[in-house]
Amino acid sequence: MAAELVGPQGLWLIHLVTTAGGLLVGLITTRFAPEAEGHGTDAAVRAFHRQRGALRGRVAPVRLVTSAITISSGGSAGREGPIALATAAVGSWYGERMGRSEEDRRLLLLVGAAAGIAAIFRSPIGAALFAVEVLYADMEFEASALLYATLSAIVAYAVSGLAGGYGALFSVPTDALTLDRPLDYGWYVVLGLAAGGVATALPVLFYRTRVFFRMLPVHAALKPAIGGFLTGLIALFLPQILGGGYGWMQQAIDGRLALGLLLTLAKMLAMSLTIASGGSGGVFAPSLFVGTMLGAACAVVAGAAHVPFAAMMMVVEMTGGYTLLAPAALAVLLSYVVQHRLSASFRHRSIYEAQVGSRAESPAHHTEHLEIALRLLRERRLSNLDELGNLDLIALLQSGLAVDIGDGRRMMVGVLRLDSAPIDASIGQSGREFAAMGATVIAILRGEHMMGPRGSTVLEAGDRLVLVCGDEAVERLASHLDPW
Image 1 (cartoon, one colour):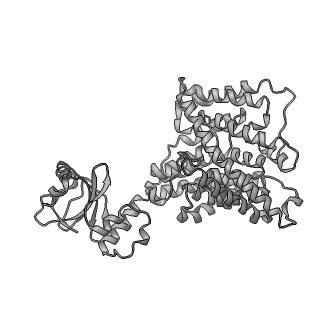
Image 2 (tube, rainbow, N blue to C red):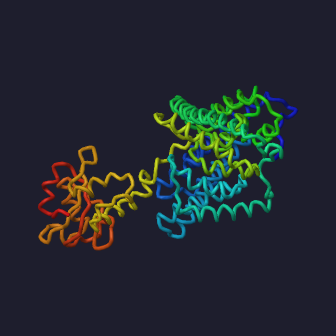
Image 3 (spheres, rainbow, N blue to C red):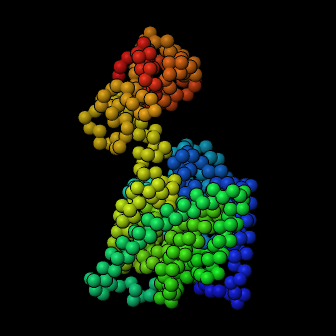
């Protein structure tokens, strides 16, 4: 790890450089790819859940250019966000070009993200865990993608190692890798609790700073410049907060850097000013810096990002401190539990706002859950509902009646009668008739298959329709549908 130092020219130009970098980034992102602003990991998470695994092809080059400008000009940001989004965009682009399914595009997006993070941080196992764990705020994983993410991460690590070497990102003194007394574990408990408090404050500070910048009555292209200027002012007194800060972290690990608590707070503010203002960069490395200065590097990342297992493995791989896995796990899990409890009532519980709570809340899995629910309904296996998880369709399966789903709407299932008017009519035609009654067909069960309501699909007698309708439409639909 290269050392970081203040050059002979001093500090007086820092705020001018960070301002110029922010201005250039603002002009590029607003002109070519607005989604390239901020921290890229969040954009990749959002694409997985809400954009069918699709990212625009131009995102990757714009993200790489703007992040390089942000970090090289002194912006307080990390490398994992840019590389995660860029490589995820490559995976998504490949899926689009090859005509792959929506499910495959999502998988390729995660595979790409894992590969990029593994190459940057020399942490193949941790990167694979991060890619499948960062999607959810609760303790859930995209387990079906873990094998492919691990394979891509290992390949990326092997290839990048040809140029940058295969050693750990940080070097840790040998005497720091052993615990001589059981009481030493007590310090990890203290560190875990402290890290949980810091990890709770970090997302709050970050997103309140973003609200501040969004309310500023200036053009969007100028906001990163303002954030860069303010970051530069902090750096006049504490230059350690500039960039990713890897060299300063190494000095802290070696015991050659003081001001730990002050740098913890300063880095939190500098990261928020740089990225929340619209600058381009990642939040993982700054969170790691905050944790390093606090003395609990992996614990802060685990709590703030809700990725405890990925954080454990990444930091262990990045330092080569495998013998500290057990005490690190203690600090990480305590941090996660503390942060989870303290942030329960907050709007932003994680540094990654695009996370969803669980698979049941992800639009990426709504069709899957509907298929499970309808299969149970079709097979009349209503006694065992464990595999449904926390689905609102449970009430539908139990009652067989139109179920209130809020906003004056109901969900119901019915079988098309032999004499029903929509028989032998396409969804495009019959849909208008259902719409006139205040109902919308959202799925069709025919035999063992579930179909989406395509306009060209011709309805047949015996089709089971899943509909969403208003209260007044339930009685009107009775003339067309038999109860299930």
